[in-house]
Length: 77
Image (cartoon, rainbow, N blue to C red; front, side, top):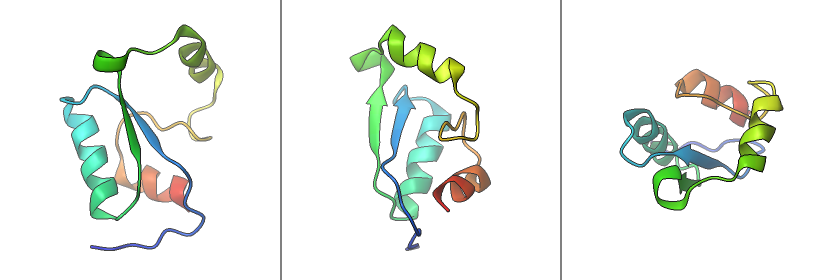
């Protein structure tokens, strides 16, 4: 299935490669021809500054937690 998403933004998924939720999210992005990067916490770690920034950010404003296809569609416009 090929989708053209208007206003497509750069997407990076942060998680653990073998996590089922991450697998679903990456598969959905690939199935919809949406380019994305993946940051594996287990392999690359994550810095405290980035985590603290995410904790201050409101969910739904550029930060998606988990995988819900409708949330991804809404965030992509």
